[in-house]
Length: 500
Image 1 (cartoon, rainbow, N blue to C red):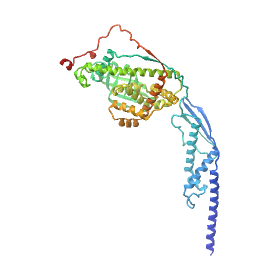
Image 2: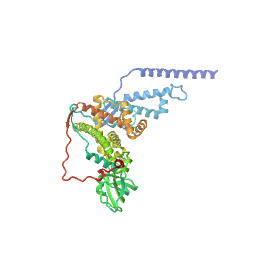
Image 3: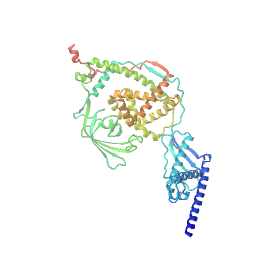
Image 4: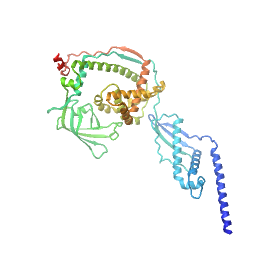
């Protein structure tokens, strides 16, 4: 009998405890349901350099308490604690059992919400996400929580007058000399690298060499066997850019050893070399010069042309089309120059280095859109890489300016426009459009293409209201003595002409 009474007392005590807990829960739920004004953070914005802002945030203690209560309420709904029904575990047990995880979750939410609100409320146009060191920031047991971060932002500037931009339109015509020059260029592309016989290296020669690259702070030197080095003003040894490389190598002979040291630019697109000193040693093994192909029947057959006259006619048409594009491009460049001269602002220097590789992709696409063949573009890549820092600065400035102009005129790029450009590039590259699009999505150049199209539309919009003046081309200065016509441009009878 006494044992039954004891069980009834324990059951009554348990029901009383649960009733109290349920009453507390109901009161907490009611308090949570009541709408309370949002507690604002204290945010201070400071300049931290060109296109950089330091954001200092203080989250009030009341807001931390509210976030903590909310976190544990959510935790209580799903937490399973032995001895208590789901959703009925007391807070003290939840804090003891899930304290570390709950604290991290509270801190993460507070930091994410506060940083995003600081950027949004202060209308900061950021470049990338804020870099916040989560581990170094602690959630205080009491009082406010303070943290800060630096973020790069878009430069702020005013657009100049965009109507009536002065633009000159030059009248251009194809000349026989231009046709001859184009034929000579074709002969060079079809030429053969021929070894020099005991002759020193000259400008634009190809040197076959073994090279050793000793990179600052790197123990093991890079060794390049039988690497190709081109004798150019701004050339490369391996992937190291070398200014005045022509001065080092002109006059070199097989067996010579050449040495130099370079400082790789701090914004170079290859991060492993960026800002480092590199000692370069070159052992010359062989020297070659480019022997142009002969303008003969075999050459014409190789390019599917029946006669030299037909070749000249085709080149005439191509050059005329190219000149028209050149006139348009020249007018575009005048608009770019007008904007560059009349808009000044600091660039986000950290982004310049990050954009160097992107600039190379954009330049590659731009050259393709201008009609250059792939092999022609490849010959220019070294020069593009050598000037990647300046290119990045110029392209970034253009990007910010064009973005603001696009916003002013509500200029957007449609999907059909992108597909049209991809189809055009696919034809030039002899690929299927869908395959080219897939490749561009993978290498990131699709976004660059969209930017190119947007910029073209912006320039076209500005040219609609530009003040255009037609002018004759500038005449070349007369030469003291006319140079003899090169053999490459001399006409030779072909088999078809002989039969006629």
